[in-house]
Length: 547
Image 1 (cartoon, rainbow, N blue to C red):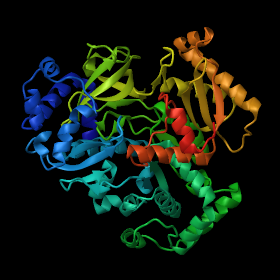
Image 2: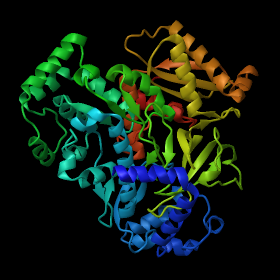
Image 3: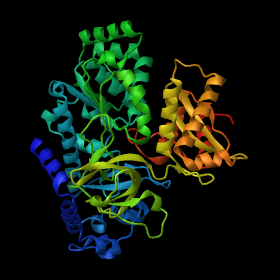
Image 4: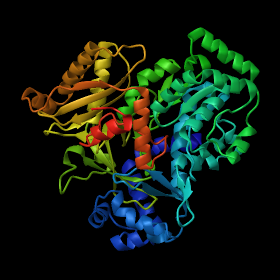
């Protein structure tokens, strides 16, 4: 595996363009017998320009009719004869219907290879990890069966189910935990197993907010958790009998560990993560885009450990692999998919410029397009990335924001990344910590924005503090966005106001969005900017806020 990682790095340094050309031909060959390929005239041997002529830039809804046919058993609607379908990855879409992304044998091979490159590099940079264990949080790949009998769920659960027994020993959380549907029961169970293991070297989950919720739940349920660790029990409802039986084989009394946890509470007055796992080496979480807002608070809970970004990946495919800690930038995964890019400023154009990987300019933002082994071609995943440099011949990208997360009431075009940067600047300036925040339009005369915030428990929600924060965010956002500054200066936008929100209200909003989107807890991305004009009303209803 080390040799494979080194070979990937060599390829990225020396032959990006040639590799991408080869990958395009492999993908066209792989699915050449599909109904979709026949309908669109896609076949091996097409040049990039010919491929673009026959295949427009599209989103998921273009493929939905073919995926619907696949679910009836017509797998060749999107896939070639030898491209075996393993599952459908479930993720939220732009409509009320969730997206079902075909996951094939080739896709999983590429997906696992990308994770292996990432994991090998992390272990090479943290030698102690070879003696420690990993807490990885995954969801089931088999939440239900499609009409064709193919499981629907989360790809991380599929990869977990495919791991060999010797590999599974490296992981603290039993695979059966992915079968727990109840989010409260699952979170408690993950905590219960994680706290029982003192030699945790790394936590791996997509969203850093997940780990912050764990810290809060550890405080709320500390005594019960320690009692379960001591007794070798799992006292939480919401788990099926079948799953409980599978988990029971991993439950043994840990008296010494329980005493360690009690001592940790005595020292800090709470179950502080840095006390529970003092030898922790690394946190594997997203740190780009809106996720970056959580990193300072995460380090306060877990200590000043290394943060290694997962890289930009989604159910549709992996895009980047970071090989350094402390940055969200990663090397484009040129061996798995064929990539194209549209300059961010041209996305609304009827004939935008489309670039190959070797044509990107440093410090410019782009929409990224994917052509994958799952039968998706020139797929606009609506992610905006920035080229921050090159690793040899291959661009290094960092995630900026979702393309849909752009708000423009009067032409100001605020991006989610600008909101995250502005709030981060203000927190540093005012020496405060925000646990969560969301900026959304407020429709008044004149219109403006409300910043919904969750304040750290150590701070008081005084009117003066809220006013100062609102003024500071307003000023910083104007510094980052000249259009916003101009609209504010001319009175077309009113000043930002702040509205503090309780933890329970944020959880209600999260549950509401998960229920309506069909996504999993691990896939949930907290929105730091919600441009939907109906969002404020939806937010208030879900969170129980009277306005």
